[in-house]
Image (cartoon, rainbow, N blue to C red; front, side, top):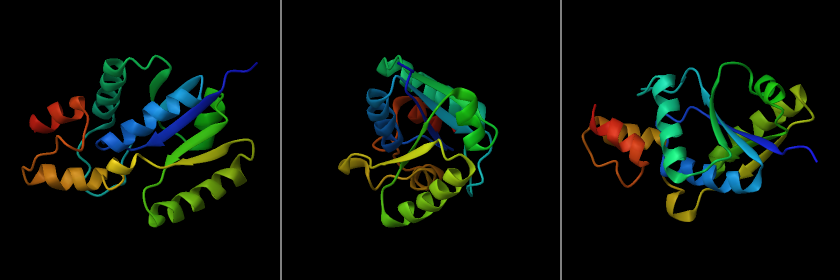
Length: 161
């Protein structure tokens, strides 16, 4: 039987506990999960370069002992990345209706480009559904406590800024 591979793409700038929740839960569903970290962030007020975002996620995955998760740079179209990696599923997190609206459009576009690749929408745990990376960036910029919202590796780097 073929290995079941999924890709969880994002900017992860920074990775939140909500992102990590989806990593842990997705890793239980697939033989291999690839966290694909966008090479560039089009989001306003980006905090971390790609190499640092990759390092933070790798550190947290290692600390959690999740052996079937790989963290790689996403530097091409998502569907091309999935084909290259042999992945047939894209994991996307949705917290609120506006997330779904955007993600639905992207899923349909990806389906048009690569009909063999499915998109799976997942919700974070209820206790984490309100956490966004942009909110964390805002809290960090003003010196607030980001610890309740981010993983240990991210928190160490935020404190160091």
